[in-house]
Length: 186
Image 1 (cartoon, rainbow, N blue to C red):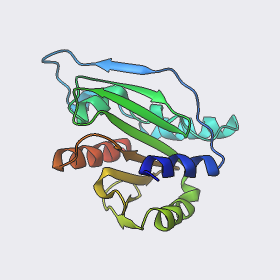
Image 2: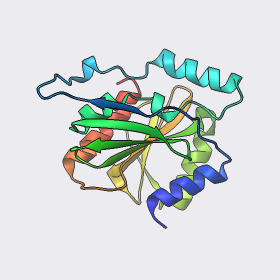
Image 3: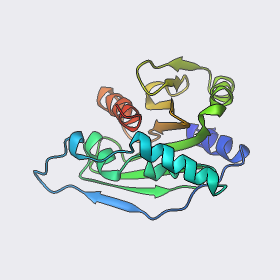
């Protein structure tokens, strides 16, 4: 089974549902300054508020498309534009135009109280994990895909950043790490 199939299957087996939301698109004009300092990202307060609100409403957790704006994904992955659309497995698929890769996935795995179970699932089903220091409160990469996916525990959420298609290499690996770190407030 492909990596993405495992992620979808794992999310479905956990009984999760995706929060619905509208598609967002950001297009960067030629010569436009795309420094990350100008790109709004989910703040600690926004993540906590979204998580608290979702729990109060009985939902499974924050919409992963809310964790990071499409413009930030576009800037990090050197794309002309990006759009984010919620998927069926508490994921957000960011489709990139002329970027390092065609798509970037952000998954929301639930509350940080589930960290041990999520990590154990990756260890058992994805050939183990490799710790990644300096990202969020804790982070790891599934051994089967290495640097092309990072799972992070930050505040009260667990999320991952992954690419399933497109080219690889140091630029893509660095972009994945940068996006995962950016979502975690770094």
